[in-house]
Length: 223
Ligand code: SF4
Image 1 (cartoon, rainbow, N blue to C red):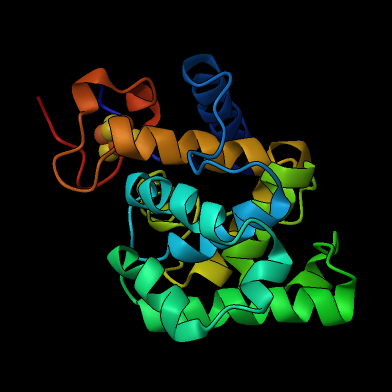
Image 2 (image 1 turned 135 degrees about the horizontal axis):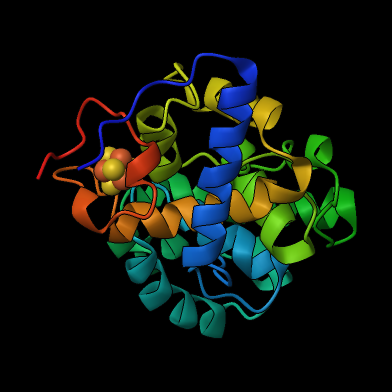
């Protein structure tokens, strides 16, 4: 296990960040969002369903949901209580059903049935907070509107000392300041994979970690 010291100067911090990004690129060159979807609308629905739920569970529920309600119009016309039962296994189903049906209605009445490609407009859609909006714009359209901060990105950004914040919106602001914009989308995808595979919440697998020579996290597992 390497003895790693905190970078002292802005130059050292920049160099270290570049090495972290290079290590993530080398390990995860082609990763993307794990939520199955055919278009931006399906991705919006899947992302709303993914709150407090695993992507695997969402991927089990969405095929049946989109078979029953193939279009945005079908979900706009649906009964919220019935949708809640259809998505029950994802948890928080009443609220999620309200958001999905509400999103479909709003998109049809105010955006001609299209997902707006502007984060300010997308944030007005029920269920689309910053994380969801960034997922949809980044993954469906390749628009780097911000950095997706989920539980993995929050934990690993703290371990790697890229932020001192704990609030996801503030973490995102810190990441936006230090990451080049062309990395905003890929960084989240890579860190989410890294967080599932290696830098897990409890007992991170530091012995297998490509970033270990750059990591001075307090909860690094010493071998
Ligand atoms: S060394 Fe351990 S704590 Fe640090 S980034 Fe790697 S897995 Fe996470």
